[in-house]
Length: 138
Image (cartoon, rainbow, N blue to C red; front, side, top):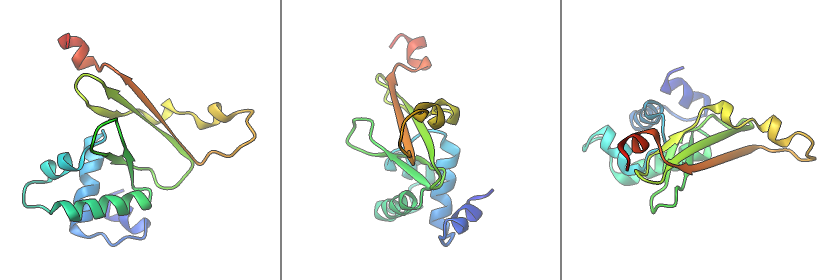
């Protein structure tokens, strides 16, 4: 499904800027800071205020997830809509990269089996050293 279809299904008009931001998040495969999104889109694509408004809207509609890896800036990655699910990240404490983990990492059914509650969403955040930093001996 392309970005325009995803936006329409979320009840949003597929404006050029929204499509660009959604495509950027989809291509990244990891959580990006707003500055990284602006850098990827190019210097004249949109201003910071427009980007933050789009990211807030995407977060409201479940199209983007917002994360804090203990830094000053939030990071954003592609969301999965508003269905019950889990989402995980691995944060490299050496280089600062924040990668999205495969969806099967967080099995909500297994985690909540035997508990008398209904989980709508869960996040897991793992900290450690990424393969690149391990290899570099950083």
